[in-house]
Image (tube, rainbow, N blue to C red; front, side, top):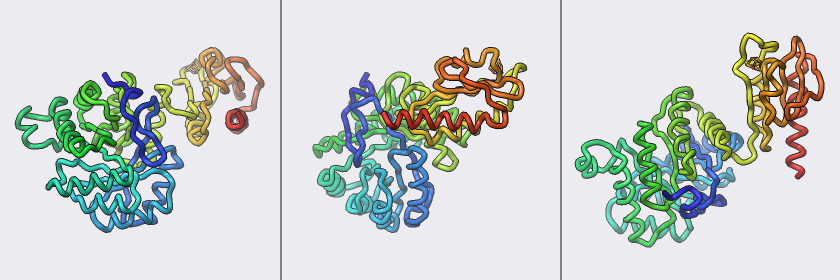
Amino acid sequence: MVLRTQTRAVKVGNIQIGGNDKIVIQSMTTTKTHDVKATVNQIKRLEEAGCQLVRVACPDMRAAEAIPLIRKEVSVPLVADIHFDYKLALKAIEGGIDKIRINPGNIGRREKVEAVVNAAKERGIPIRIGVNAGSLEKRILKKYGYPTAEGMVESALYHIGILEDLDFRDIIVSLKASDVRLAIEAYKLAARTFDYPLHLGITESGTLFSGTVKSAAGLGALLAEGIGNTMRISLSADPVEEVKVSRELLKSFGLAANAATLVSCPTCGRIEIDLISIANEVEEYISKIKAPIKVSVLGCAVNGPGEAKEADIGIAGARGEGLLFRHGKVIRKIPEKDMVSELKKEIDKLAEEYYRK
Ligand code: SF4
């Protein structure tokens, strides 16, 4: 099994995908790419949420021509998503794109593939091969009867082979399926078959709620095994939500660098404060903190501080007031109305201490 630390390292703009234990968070804009203003605004929102690589659809020449204009306005590396048309790929590369997603086997004649590969080589731009269970090559479907992990990896190897024949190895591969078990199987087989970095994703996973559960189930199983170098959570929702889910998922595996984590209790009959709204407010607040701080919000003091010994800072409800505690030790009491604001101040202090280090 080629674990994420053992894959090839591929540079995308100023970031590295593969060859280390980092997982790069991606998302994709939902604006029309030719609408430069709307696309730039969305990219900036994604970047602020923690997105490290943004993909834009490039369905036509208008979109490809917008790439240099978008490139000028944002600093995050950009990926152009292209299907079939090599001219769009060339235009995107010329326009300063940092990576292209195109399947070389779908480009057509060899000269066209060569033109794209040569342009990518000249500019040091990697290519992501995107295998999708729903659009496998006819001959592969005929061979296996229906989409299988073996068929998906065979498709990946076909496209990889075309690039390797042209001595091109800055490759990243995705093997997406909307069936969670199929995606897990395909990624595991890929990790046993080649050492190119893997872009994880469950395609067409659904809405914010169902898609989050489905993606976390599939990607969680892979991340736990050490598979995957970059990921996108695909949701029928604002793409900023995709980034939030990615960050939360990475945090749960200790794989998110410099992100604050919230621990909150499920509440029970012992509850002494309005915990659910406090937890939501604190969660929103810490989403912008770029320090590995653990914050705990608990409904009562019976088990509270003890249940969150690991927390750097936390509050526990205690009849109309809250106990502020650090690493399980109570520091002081705070009236209920000031609990959240005091907790935020303490979080800021800890973050400042971390940034100064
Ligand atoms: Fe119940 Fe208190 Fe535990 Fe929350 S911390 S689940 S309120 S006992």
